[in-house]
Figure (cartoon, rainbow, N blue to C red):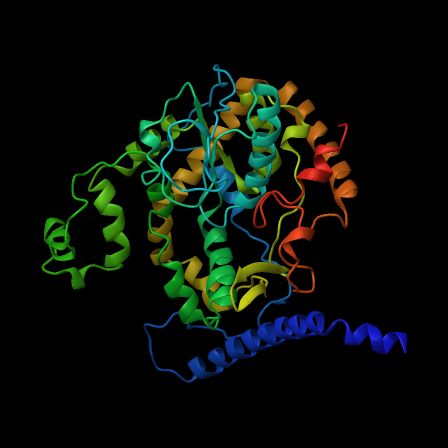
Length: 428
């Protein structure tokens, strides 16, 4: 009888779990079917050439082979870099007035986080919001410090006009290929339920042309913001816009940068930011962030945010959806090793490498010995935080895909900073 009552009271849990399983099975069957269909295709321009073997275990998160190679590349060549200096001004805790906590209007003061999508930014936002609330108690009689931590471009937020003595501007990058994979499975395959075929994957990935540069730049290098597609094509030496490969993607980049050397743009981005973190080096980045701003270990603690293989908040009609775990087909692996993809991400990869090099230079400038002491302290604190917060963090969705009532959530807002209470009570 008890078992019957249990299953009866958990219909929503079982329905959401079943839906998640069905989505994964459907994706796998569809992808495998696409291999079979394309094996009979004579389209020699297709990316489905060569062996069509069974996929690697699709239940595993992609283990990315590009990181070590990129880290090595970042330490050679003529890429610009800098050692980010310590923030020599008072902690930028400004009164936000009646501003909504998460808002995307322009800002010239406060804690300014330029937030590219699918770069681990949810973890950073949790730290920022906790910092904004707790520092407000120390810095003045206000509820929280002024913050910007929404998605959007630095140009749209007018960061180029910020007061550098009253603001700390920083961002985070992820290897462009890793980001493209995560973006496709989170948004296209999961949120918009696009069938994860090689063709759909490839088309979605090609939008990542100069996207980091466009997101992070605080400067507009041209006055062609009203340039039409055809005018743009003629300016670039084409007869019509249709002649431009990846035209609509490149158009957005050239509206901002024109033919300005991308190497100079990368140098300007490094100069315009107080710090840029690296997702694949999250703990190292957070310790540098701590040392630049003079924070405590407790102020940079975090717990693991939502990821593939779990449920994420959605929208009306689908308030919680299962994030399909990332995986790569042989065709997509070939595409990511192609010249086409290399050209697509070339400038963003150069920025990523420059940021990696800058992270190393900053650690050296701050002092490796002190950095290592702080890094070990962070790792001890993270273990304590994970243990203390276990089972206590309540976001918008349960592990089974049910909506958590608003009054039961532990977040500052939406699914942001849901671990703040269980971290704040720690003594570490």
